Image 1 (spheres, rainbow, N blue to C red):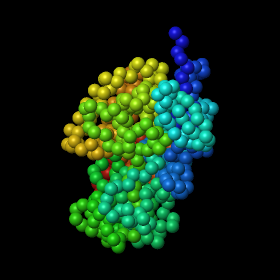
Image 2 (cartoon, rainbow, N blue to C red; image 1 turned 30 degrees about the vertical axis):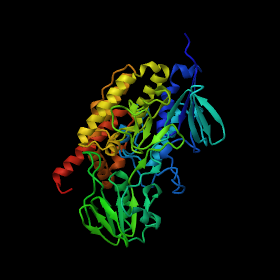
Image 3 (tube, helix red, strand yellow; image 1 turned 135 degrees about the horizontal axis):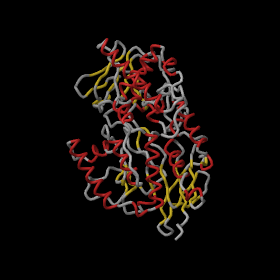
Image 4 (cartoon, rainbow, N blue to C red; image 1 turned 180 degrees about the vertical axis):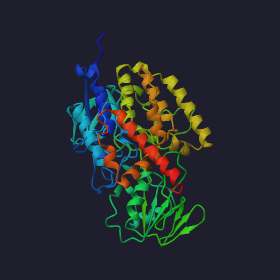
Length: 475
């Protein structure tokens, strides 16, 4: 029996949306015209977060700052069948990644599926027709059988809940890093505190350190091994702990009871909320811990729950096999994972019965209990905050499970695991190579023979970094 036609809507044409388009476009059903495929992108180009925008709007269209370079070597983060150009710096600038995504879209002929300057305003499930009613900023109303929510989660700022912070924000003494671009215009400040434990906070501290006499770096909590490496304290950079209260007159009380005074600017590199303003079918708030699973889909702003395979919503308002939420896990290698998630999505669109809701429910409950044991808490908010923060090797396990779901087997290559585990040392090592002036020489001809060239370069960087540490253990 011939399969019924299906209409697929992808929200967003960043890396996630493009990966979804690429995988679906290679399906026979799309190529034969049996499935129709369209992605709606609110901006005038593809690229998502990598496509820069001025620091205007609430919030800006992109939080990309001028000094941003990737946190992962591009040979690890690239789509497996579309590498970066030979001799590309190992940690490319944001503009290089944007060009890479544009080239990816062109190479796989994806722009034919993309409608630019078309923002999705509303997505509602019509129980009568059994389809999604999608309203665009153009005023159009369209119907779809399946929706892929790939709108990204680096847009709406996440503000910490700390006493006194709102007063600093209201007075203009504090702003979120979503509005940060460079230190120009901030050089008149004398003592700046940057709050956040991630790579963006580290980058902003480095930026500001060149123009401000003293940078205080407030690190809210511990990080996983290999995640980031913090600079050593210097005369104009000092690490401090989590903030307990923002007080008047530039004073900040830390959780250890100490106080920092005369702070005249606060930059909050505190992350972003998961946000789906167009989707009324999702409940905003922290869900109760399972079992049982809630009957509604919840967005805690830290996670979306409950999702089978971290993709498909198990709830009672609409079919779990009619919508997917790729790109939510953190501490992962994003681009390859986006394609693997897209293959799982293609599997469910083609064969909805392949999604075993009972088995997936058992898996979600088991994961919830594992996270509770690991975090030593049954606080739903703390579980929400850590739900998508994968353990060190979990990204590879997850990819293997996704690929197994599509009927194939996959084991992460040894080199991928090696570079992932050593990513912090590798990034520090490459910075040292660039500082020494040897980067251009080391990159010459690298990539002309494919991925093996890049693996060899990474291992060369790691070897040089280890030898330097052994020679000068104070580094």
